[in-house]
Length: 207
Image (cartoon, rainbow, N blue to C red; front, side, top):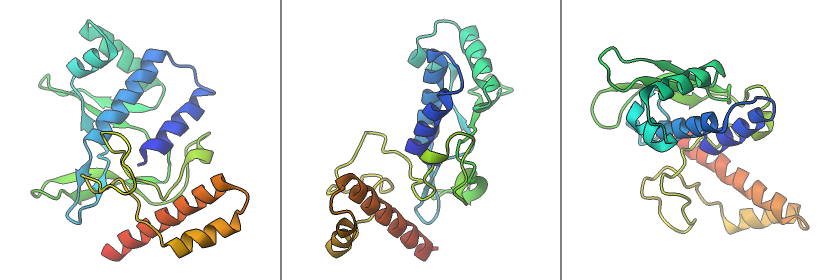
């Protein structure tokens, strides 16, 4: 799952779906929590877990809610939009959330976590299909998690190792720019796409 493409698809979805500002904030909070719960497999690749936990106390603090029933009411409203599922914990612990991705080209698969033998169900990209109304924003190649502390300069090593795209050669960049001599924006996106394709090739070689 990709943070940016899901975010853009969410706003495209809002063009035809009316939900309150606080419901929007709730969805953003769940995206953050889901991304923060990212797990790493035995090969070192990072994945978004399908299910994740978020205590009501955290929801209340971030959304400025004072009462528990406000969380329940707001969560029920968000569930009715079809964007999230929720399962209450039987022992009064943090419940389990599951976001419904806009990108329909994802499937839930099981992986073994890098540390230990725990099996975790995660989202894995298998095709480029997108949810209704989200097609222009879904990029099947860019399925990285967002860096939790913000953007990382290209010349800086990523401390978590999963947010930066591999570089292409200067010759490859020059060839791409030659295709778009009067359009720097198009050249930028073409170079970005080439780096994403290279990332996929590297990932496939490691498997």
